[in-house]
Image (cartoon, rainbow, N blue to C red; front, side):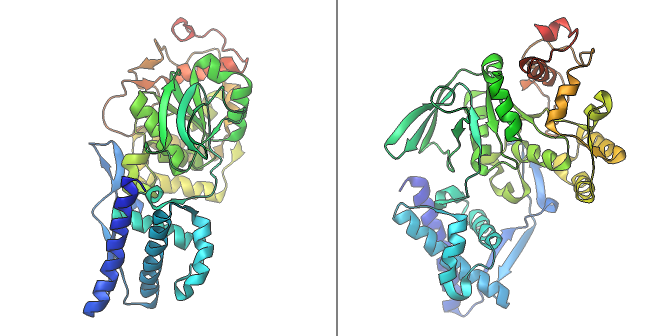
Amino acid sequence: MNDRQKVAMDRLTEVAEGIYDALDRGDIPQMTLPLRSKRNIEFDPMTQVWKYGSLKTTRTAKTTQGATTMLRTAYTTDFINEMIRENKSSTLREMYYISEGWNAAKFHTQDEGNLLAEDLETISHCMREDFKLRPEESGAHVYGNVTFRTMTKKGMKDINCMDDVSEQGFAVPYSVEKETFEIKSHDVKFIMALETGGMYARLIENGFPEKAECCLVHLSGQPARSTRRLIKRLNEENGLPVVVFTDGDPWSFRIFASVAYGAIKTAHISDYLATPTAQFIGITASDILNYDLPTDKLNDKDIGALHAELTDPRFNDEFWDSEIHAMLDMGKKAEQQAAWIMSRTRICPKNCRSLVCSEKHHNGTNAPGGTRGRMCQTYIRFLFYRVHGILLKNPCARCAS
């Protein structure tokens, strides 16, 4: 049991004791939590991420549903404390099945268990990983010349994410905190996070990590918390710029937002998970228009999601407002693979002097302040095209260099 787990255990015990003490006094137990919605997220200029604001919601045992939630809280805190004491762990799915033995407190759906675990995080100010609770396998992998020192069944072991792994890369564990996971060394210039496994595999096949001196991170769709935490650590502790390459649709915009700004459902731990300097280099509505990319028609859910993003404060800046409105106007979306078409342009979009620049090249961030030190989008795209054997015609000398 490490120090973080001891703290988690003590704080969860306090939560359970608070419920029992209220019952002993003849009072109705209740818990006050931040309201978890986009109405209650605010930009924190100190950390450059989005967090919950001052709006609160109260869970009370006045109703049958509220009383059931309190009972589940007591059972769950006892379950977590037992795991910590015995140095065991459980998936959220396993906790859902184990709750079958909790009688009236059993979860009817896994989402109920997931939400309660998040509630306990906000109350205790600890992370789910400290509770020894983990999700099912996320499918996220890392490939590049980065060496991690991680816990295995035989103890701590150094693993290079290029030399010591298969072409699939290094599987990201559910916890990447310093107690059991170290970033030993690296020989890369930036991190490229990719939405899809197909694109991730193609780049590895074509030697992109070696030629571009980068580390690829497969997000596997909406990225797991451990994946976002690892990206943040690579960025903060090693000064590695982060770029995110996704499809051009509203769901992919949200994938980027969860990496760069923080997800709404985990805004209570945005400090740990979000990388505010991450840059969006995915497919945009402007790309579709400028390069006549192959597209699919937006469906009703896509349109609804885009309208929702227009009222999401994380997308409240000129770049996102313009791109979202343009996508709604054209009624189309595009996948990552459409990027091959962009390589046929004869015009270099920007004159870029170096790998890291101070220009505002579609940085796709609504964080206040300048963009110094962020990865130059055009340079990355140029490398992207070259590695796939599709050369830009007449790129500007600065980009070519």
